[in-house]
Each structure stands twice: as C-alpha cells, then as structure tokens.
Amino acid sequence: MARSSATLGVAVLLAALAPSISEAAQGVVHKVSSARESYAEIAQHYYGVRALGHHLRVVNRVPEPLTYGRTLVIPTCRSVALKKGQTLEAFAKANLGDPARAEYLEVLHFLKTKTPKAGKLLKIPTTLKHVVRPGETLASIGRLYYQDGGARRQQLLALYNKLPRASIAVGDTLRIPLDTDPFDHDAVVRRSKLPFDGAPPAEVAAADAPRPAKPRAAARPASEHGPIPLEEAQEQVEVVERLYGEGRYAQCLEYAKRVLERDDTRLPPGPKVELLRLAGSSLVAMDRIAEAETTFAQLARIDPDYELDLYRTSPKILDVFESAQP
Image (cartoon, rainbow, N blue to C red; front, side, top):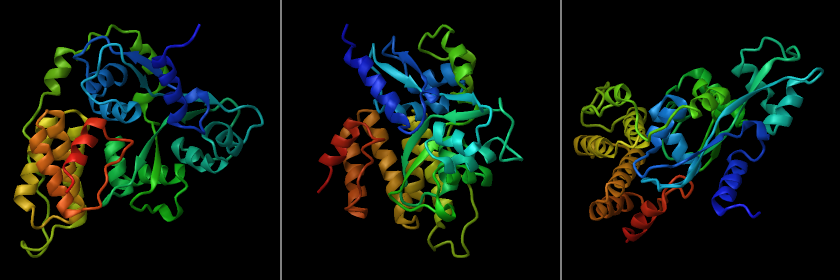
C-alpha cells in the first residue's frame, strides 16, 4: 500500500533533521486534532515547557495557525549504551556523524576519562539548523535555544560544530543539539500517552499568562547620547525573539516598538534590523499586513541587502517581506 504524502513528508523531515545522526535520535510524531492547537501548547504537552514551541516551529517549518490533520515531528534525544571495546571516537562517528565530536560527549557527560566503561549511556541528540545573523554570539544563541548562554553551553556548541577558536561569523550554519532534559526520548514518549486536548492546563495557562514587558534597565555608556553597546542591544533583541518564539505576537510587537521608539537613533544597525524583522513578522501573524509591509520597508531602507532565512521563515511572511521591497 502506498504511503500518504503526509507520512512521506514526516519521514523525509525526520531524516533531514540531522543527516549524519543515527535513527536512534529520531523523535515521535503528533497529529493536530484541533485548529486551536499551537506550537506552545504542543511543546507544553510533550516537553513540559511552552517556550520550546519555538523549536517545534523551526523543526517542522509549518506556520501557525496549524491545520487539522497536520502531522508534526516532536524531536527527542535518546541515550545509547557504549558497546564493549567501543571508543568515544567510534561512538561519535557512528552516532554523531564525526569522531571529533567525542570531545563534545566528554564535556556533555562530565567524563573524566576518554575510555568510559561499556554500558555507559551517552546522549544522541537530534539537532536543529541555525544560520548566524548579524550581532549574534554563541552566548546569545545559547540563550535563544537553551535559555543558557553560559561558558559551558558555549563550549558545547563550539565542540559540536567543531568551531575553530569558538568563533562564528554571519551566515555560518550551526547545528543546535537538543541535549537537555526536556527532550529525553523516554520522557517524551511517556507524555505522548497522556490525553491531549489542544489547550494547556488551567494552572499552566495562568502561570504563563502574558505579562507587561518592560525593557531591561542596563548600564549606559558614559555618554547618554552615544550609541548603545552591541551586547546590550542584542539582549533586547533576545527578549523580543523569545516572545516571538512563544507565539506572544502582541507582546513581541509592543516590546520591539518600545525599544525602537526609545532608542532608535542609538541602536546599532544589526539589532535595529532584527527588531524590525520580529515586529513585521508579528504583524503578519496577527494579519496586520499593511503595517507589516511598512515595517519591512523600513527594514529595507536600513539594509537593502537583507534577506530572510528561508529555512526559519513561513511562506506568508516571506511573501509580505518580498512585496515590501522597493
């Protein structure tokens, strides 16, 4: 019997998530049963963390609102036992696509020896693709995907991607390993067996209710009239990015506008463009197309060569962005 196009699409997407990774890292699937489901609610059900809806959006490349019957991939991270006589390099080659990622496993699992005992469980994470944007650092990327921009997380990202001197440049493609506890395969499978009604429990919804967003008060340069330091501006972008990733489009737009209106003349061009991108994308998500076109046109005036990431951007946003170009 021929497989349905939806099933084939999911199979292709599972294979494409991390081409060099074994099948052990593949996730589970979720079938949308209600038009009111959102990535945040699905992430809450499978991971217990609504903010990981951003990761589901990146993996599945399907814009909201989700349609009834749509099959989505829920990526997970499995643990596999080291075989007798198998070295870390051999394990990394077989399961992570490259023997050089043995050092990543050492740091991830706090291993004190390069020859752990047979039977030691090692993580095989599914990975996401991330294209480095202007102003991004390993720290900001860590905060975006893990809510952790610390030195250890930066080291793990550098080791997994085999980055020389842990440096990145605009346009670089990174793989983001989903190696944290919420992605544990067995835990996700257990959660998948619980009833899903397309909405978060009342206590979760109350705890996650939108809160007024206030720009973080940060130290200013010596001159109040000078440019804002890039790192400080990027922190503002990360807040807006997080709101957008959680599907809080109204708050994302409000925060972005507030920062732009307050500091427009002092923001570095890179963060300013990213704020406009997020504001415009939020407007599209709220079907405020004319305002979105105006916002994207403003972005184009600042950076005429700016292009949206085709991998991470919905076709609807891409169409509006294209129509706003001069």
